[in-house]
Image (tube, rainbow, N blue to C red; front, side, top):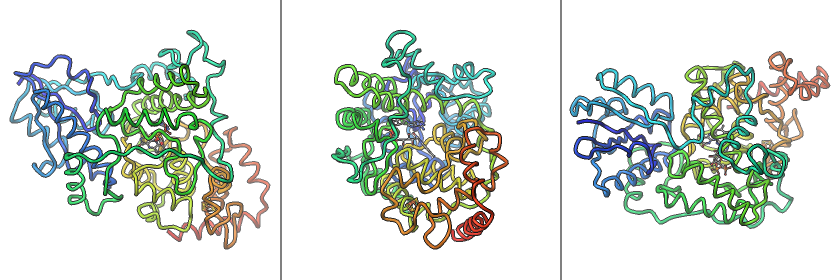
Length: 508
Ligand SMILES: Cc1cc2nc3c(=O)[nH]c(=O)nc-3n(C[C@H](O)[C@H](O)[C@H](O)COP(=O)(O)OP(=O)(O)OC[C@H]3O[C@@H](n4cnc5c(N)ncnc54)[C@H](O)[C@@H]3O)c2cc1C
Ligand code: SF4
């Protein structure tokens, strides 16, 4: 054999560089479903099913194109890890070279390097065309800068790809960022006319996968009666089309808002399709831009959407490769508590957490602010061990892959890195959740109260967090306002808060 081409579960790009120079007589594609990818974190059943169904659809397309594919299906072999499965193929087939698009996750990258080295076979990594920047470009941009900020990287990429630009250097509308207009809450009567989400009738492949996952992983978290997430590029395009036609205009204003029993609102729901490489980010961005130019979609909404993909998505990937593997072991705030058990059930009296976790178990989805300012915020204030909260996020969302999950969880949400990703910790009391949702109206706690029977645990823990970490944030100007408010509290109040925070921490 000349070359073995590895295709990983999140590399389902039909236009990948891996197809450029194939000799079908002497080369072979290789894909493997392995136990460890479903169990190294306690994966949501829908996450497992989505990967398997999308992989099987991809492999079938290769076979239909009469390309040689060696596909190891779960249950039909006994290898527990990718490395073990690959090692066996390398022993038997002895290819001259192994080619693979650069893996997204450090763990996988390391294991492939190790196993190819062990077999003394050349391992060639191809550029991942599914991003709009490269880790090397990001590293060069980061250079010796003391502090990296999303905004400047985002502007660099806007110019590079000429997205929403007036001319080569200036943004359309004269402003780079409409973040301030993207933070409105819903009015009292809540969100209006939320469009139905997409859904497809499961085909034979997906039906088989659903049965397989339910039988193989019955105790894993989450429901899996149906699978509504896109498993092919055609479905991913349809999901994008639905968002552009029906949600984009309303996406901007209420991007951060939350509402009971409304899990999806006007969000695009395309993260899993982007991460599995069923949809190309540039296609998504250019189509959104087209809706601004040709269909009058508001600039603030389109820019808000583009910023998530061209800005945040590329930024977190750059940071991930710049700071791995050290990032995974940081714990700047010394968080040392176990993840409360209700994260796996949603059974808690705190309505915001119950709503967010229950929809997560039902759909494998929660939108950004639910992840950051509900489950993430509670974990940060409560002091959950970074490894445990990281593994929870990696397990429960259908879009979860480490290169994007880890920076968002450990950096943005848990501040374990002392500011690599965020210029200050995203902390707030229950009042923020009350402002941005109707969760508190149906909750037994009162968001404004920090002590007493009805005190909101977020509010108690918020003041306790500031109190116990004052020294960490003394020199951070962005924390000055919060610390000043803390200093206004008298000693009796602080003592009561500390004691109530201790009680909350004993509850879970
Ligand atoms: C603690 C935490 C963990 C997260 N884990 C993941 C994860 O495992 N996988 C993942 O794709 N996203 C993750 N995110 C980012 C974000 O929450 C999701 O991308 C988004 O909620 C997906 O829903 P959507 O497709 O409807 O996005 P929309 O709100 O419609 O946004 C459009 C797209 O922008 C991109 N995007 C938005 N925010 C971010 C961000 N902060 N970082 C990177 N890309 C972003 C996504 O590709 C998304 O599909 C996480 C955020 C937090 C706070
Ligand atoms: S009162 Fe507190 S716990 Fe209850 S929903 Fe509001 S923020 Fe959440």
